[in-house]
Length: 363
Image 1: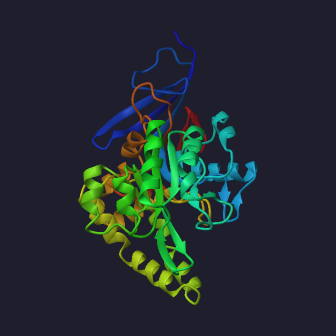
Image 2: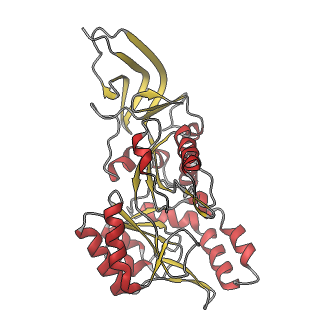
Image 3: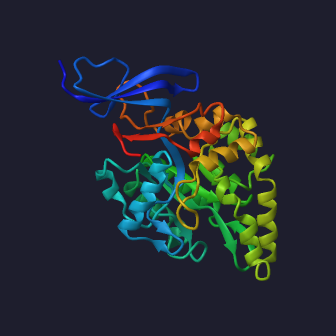
């Protein structure tokens, strides 16, 4: 007979989009679908349970000025956790957040190391700023420091031309991506515009962040190569404000940003329709608040992605893409419980009833 305290989740447990079970048990922080024998203390939570949500583009340890102190990083992580985000792919941060791994009350983080950008072609204090001859060495460095991902800045404003343009020559990205893959890391890149995308995809990149420059002629290439996109639509919503603020100094850039914003939903829907993998990411950190994952899922639905597929982009599908378990037998008990069925209405994600992390109710 066991005397372990257990958590009983009862109602509908969404193990997959078409796999709903009546209950699960949390024993020693792990998921079980077998009723424990002799449990002395059982706490029951009722509702609709999902695997802990994924924010696949988030920045813990970063604000508008660059790296932040640990106490600020902690608040960022707690905000994400309380919104139901229990797995983060940190898409570039100059802060060392490894201490979070020792906290069982904070989300799990998959790190991409620090951004790698061209000199004077990105936000100050965010990235390593280098020239193409050093790209392979810095990619190798961040591949070793990260958790299986490396983040490039693929394009940014060129102040000489006054518009977005690619940051790296083709031969440099080919060599850098090959080196990352040799070291077992996947590569992703920040890309707003159109002209960097073909080189990056043909060079073997694994993912594109934002992907607002994805055009009809590039979609078949992405689809055939299996390159994922993380649209960060809650961030793209800021483009008109950014454009207005730079209108007098960079009119070409401002007009370009407005065009990218205007077609954002069509871009995402066309990508989805072509079979390009689409995942949820908020771009929290930098200038955006944390805890926006529910809003990003709703934006994907607005773009025309079916609700269950938008939900998978932050739940079952996203976890599989990142190589992390969901709610299968024996997995860490990271889950979120809601009052309603999120498959029927993704808006319920904005109001979690309970958040369970490593088998403990934390929110």
